[in-house]
Length: 469
Ligand code: NAD
Ligand code: SIN
Image (cartoon, rainbow, N blue to C red):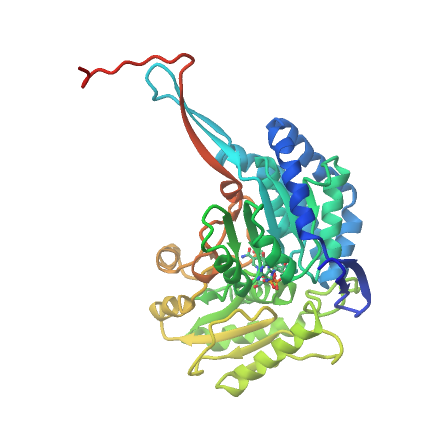
């Protein structure tokens, strides 16, 4: 496994960006096991000090970091900068989350003594990252794991190793020992080897449902390991009556096409009431025509860049073709202007009359439109998926949103807001195939430590009151 080379390419130009060797999984785990007791024994205040220094390192390196993210993912530079900001913001949010959700609590109910709940770290955590947010999402596991007293082996996506390496370098520059946060280069094979290693204590995964289910299966007979799975979505955005159709169109475009549709929370299905279809789609199509698709550093700044690689662009083009040839009606064809580059223009397709609409995540700039007669049918359609990550209602009044909230099955349910752009200060997770009920972001603290209940007295004091001879 160790002599295999990994190479990443800039999606926008095809140029080679980074090259490196696969990690030695056994060595990473052995290092982590040795490092854990030392890190776990540090006072919480010291661990917090280290992650604050890490935030400062990222701040110092912010421009270079954003540039690297833009080059390796193809996302626009302005958007890469927001990812760096999110990495920095995660630190203070995670410190607050640890105190609020885990940490130490004294209970006052014990008779002549004290009762307390304290949390302990699990040990060696494997963090497996995706390519679409190669810094922010793994960091959302790593920082809370470190604060809680775990050590981390981080395997970035094989498509974004350079960003992974940069992130880990910032931890080391902040004075954190290299064995406490280790970079593990590799692909699915190294991921599998880490997941099934006997000496690890948990897996914190963000990625596709296919990989998440494989990890779940690999650990099915091993309940001792903590497993947090953040997976994909087939997210609905429902539009009801609103006088602000241009704003609705902006929310739809933002939900469906930001990051070239490569967000787990992207809207994949636009559900529209019949009588709104024509005026709404006119606005959506007009706006979509204006979205600039270009390389990350272009001037004027693009709305979106390419998808991650040519193979993905090919797969998405074939998926669009499949929808068109199986009953879908293209409202805006998804185009690939350069055959050798993974730029795709946004595609919009009406799939109302498709007999068998595939319930899968098409991780790119494809929006399906489904017409429905009324709000009840819209809710049924919103729930017509095995996923359950995010959902939005546009328009309507508070009572409509209450109904939407009560009946739609998802971990994020918004009103007059996009489906994406989830807040780090809230729990972030889904139901169905989108997650395993271990939400990340603010609730990441919950899966990074386990509670220990204690009742305590400074001296043994007891007697047996009944049943003695
Ligand atoms: P992916 O599943 O292909 O890979 C994710 C990571 O898992 C990579 O590091 C990969 O090497 C590793 N991996 C793959 N198979 C594995 C296995 N069997 N065992 C162990 N490790 C394995 O995901 P991706 O294509 O990089 O990312 C895009 C996906 O991530 C989309 O489906 C998107 O919806 C999802 N995503 C989810 C969230 C969320 O928080 N819910 C956020 C961002 C992205
Ligand atoms: C993602 O993690 O892919 C999306 C986060 C968001 O924009 O909600």
